[in-house]
Amino acid sequence: MLDINPILLLATFVVFLSLIAVLNSWLYRPLFSFMNKRDEDIKKDLNKIGSNDDEIQALHEKAELIVNNAKLDAAALREKVVADAKELAESKLEARRAELASEYVEFEKSLAASRDELTTELTSQVPVFKQAVEAKFSQI
Image 1 (cartoon, rainbow, N blue to C red):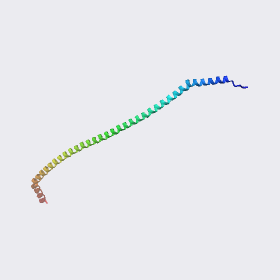
Image 2: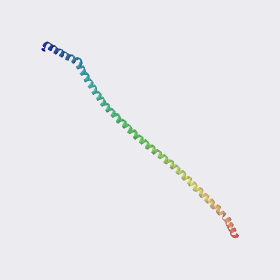
Image 3: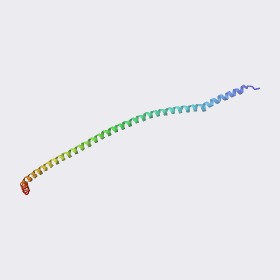
């Protein structure tokens, strides 16, 4: 029947071991070194991403700080402009009030002068009015 030939068994064992040795040196070691290198590259990239996240976060914080400072500066500038505008408007109103007050004083003076003139004119016309009233009464 079937006999086991020790020489063939030994030859098969030697071929198997030599095949493992050749595959180990030509296939497995380069494949494992490539996989290890790839894992290291992935870890480096992840570390870079982490540092980039930190850098991005720092830049975002810096940008927010700049925006907040700009908002504060804009608010201060707006307040200053509003205060200046109010001051200018108040000075113009005060100047106009003073002008109107002087015009009113002049108007009062001219009104007083007109009243005095009308009073003197009416007092000079009193005898004429009296004669006209007496003439009317005499006609009645």
